[in-house]
Image (tube, rainbow, N blue to C red):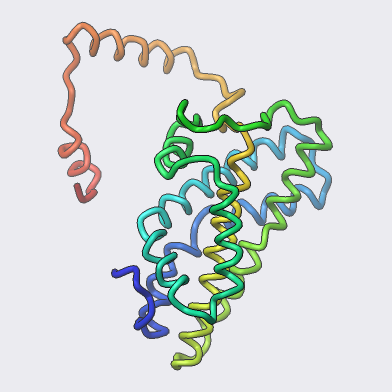
Length: 231
């Protein structure tokens, strides 16, 4: 679907939004809220934050392609002036390049050419880590998502379509603010996880076979076909 959402009907826009607002991030956030409410230990919070972060990455990949078209649409209308000011603050504070943000989501490491994160999540005190989890759990993104879900259920009309688009742009800007906030943090979701010996041995053997030129490599097209994916 095109990313200029201006002329979409309520039904069309709601359909486009569904894979964005029905991601694992939002389920993980609910679990994180519950853990914080019951004063769960750090180990439990760390495990759930791993799921939360991976859910955020999934949302980021979903919004990565339409980001620039959506920003163009947002900037084209004076009714979004407050959101435009928030976007300007994000863009002024950003330190990483678009490619660097993609690399960090894919490999958990920023590009060497980008500024390095200032805060290592694993080095935070228990109190500091809990405070960070509370910050994420209370991010405006989640209240904005609830407004979208409610508006998706109202009777279709031109007014409802406009309200839904406004709610989405608020959600979208909260997402940009979250992405920019995460730039300050060095976080590896795989840190502390143990690799089973048999898996580690298999990986080492596979790497050795590839380096020796004896590995039987399967084309990515065949893998995609086997999984029923489009490539």
